[in-house]
Image 1 (cartoon, rainbow, N blue to C red):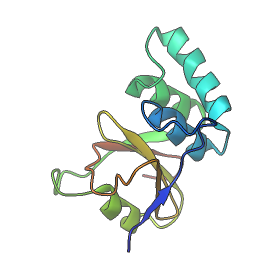
Image 2 (image 1 turned 180 degrees about the vertical axis):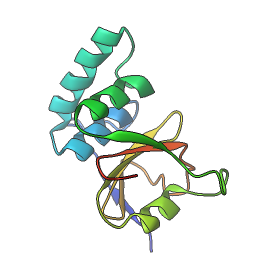
Image 3 (image 1 turned 90 degrees about the horizontal axis):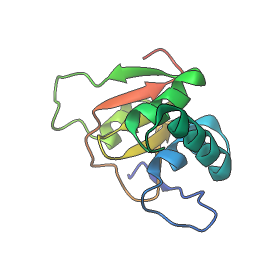
Length: 128
């Protein structure tokens, strides 16, 4: 059973280059437009692009999320699907280095099936 749910709140249904906007929108329960505005303002303040890890991470931190490392027990084989299976409750934002998605209640919300990608770190508003 796939844990992936197609999720693309972009008003024009574009699906490339805005993964941080989609992930923040889902994690915070806000619209794509609101998430984009927050990220653009934070990117401007930090003098970096809105999709830079430290920019969207800063927005999550300001909204009660903490960053955690993925356990190093299997750094090349622990997938987003494994993470979703292990985290059936709550909101989790996975960082893959050059991609980001949100998991809520064991479901992977993304514009494409990223379930086989290997996350490097995650953010959550729950105890890590």
